[in-house]
View (cartoon, rainbow, N blue to C red):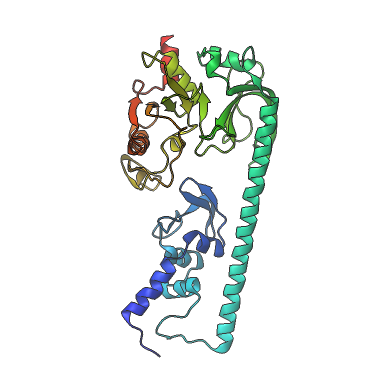
Amino acid sequence: MARASDSEWTRWFEEAKARDIREVALQFGAQLKRAGNEWVGPCPLCGGRDRFSVNQQKRVFNCRGAEDGGGSTIDLVMHVEGCDLITATEKINGTPRPDRSRDESATDRKSREQFHTARAADYARRAEEERIAIEKKAARDEAAVSDVLKRATPITGTHAEAYLRETRGLTPSPYLTGDLRFVEELDYWGAGDNGSGETMLLARLPALIAVIRAFDGEAIGIAQTYLDPTEPKKWQPIGSPRNSPKKIRGRKQGGMIRLGRPEETIAIGEGWENVLAWHQCGMPDSMEDVMLAAAVDLGNLAGKATGHMAHKTLTDADGRPRRMPNGKADPKHPGVILPPGIKAVIIIADNDSEWFATLGHIRVAVDRWMAQDLHVQIAWPPTGKDWNAYLLENR
């Protein structure tokens, strides 16, 4: 048996830890889907639906069924395979331990090499299948968005306009609603109530369509609000409680819903309803040269942070502090990209959800745009409200 130095052992372990943790998870049987900064899915060992996750940037995994909750790439393999530290590292690297304390016979080496070749081929096959599936979905979404927009009409005089007026209290000028459209009948696909999770056609409904555009004006997606067919209100979904009357088709990342023409100052919030409500409340005092826009959600408004911090009060199901953005913008993941020529930003904030976490995202957006030498201010509604609720109370 050869003696291995501490540095040889360290290099061997670090080689395993440096592997792409998502690739390792897939090689050991994980089926993952992207969810924000992570990839989530059932645990290859203990199942579930979304109890298992990996973070490629941090090179860590988490599983609610793991003894210590999660850990490094090596810990992942130890958890899934039920093996010890050295065996897990051997499985990841495909090389024997440095001290040669378990030297292989020619038969063992051939078996190991065949195993790793087959596993690598299986990973490559599944990665290619995933790439093709993503490309096909993107093509389907692009075709679907194009088809919906071809059928869409201006909202004036439609069920969508009645919804804005009677349910939302909104009476925007037509020059603000050019990218808000109406479709008289739109398929609603969602999960049924049989517990299978199978996607099926549940209804055909009227819908209000908001166009999502990239910074150059190209339509990249749509935000669909399904409406009750008889009353001017949002449809209440049937089937699974996970179904929502609002759906995004196509892409939203980096894009925005434009309400009016580009100007040097942009007032931008999460949802287009709240932005229109803020405008209708008469804020700011002078609306000249102000463009209105919506980023669809808070994550796209702010973009990603460079890291996270512990929430001061909230904890997860296991009693650990919830994580929230650290307020520092990651320049590689900017979220919504503003049109050229913008010099100032007014962030139309919501104040009806958990304030501390919301503030974390807002701080990321402020940090990002101030780094671009833009003047930034925040318009907060009263505590516990968003701007649309404030408008409805004071109309």
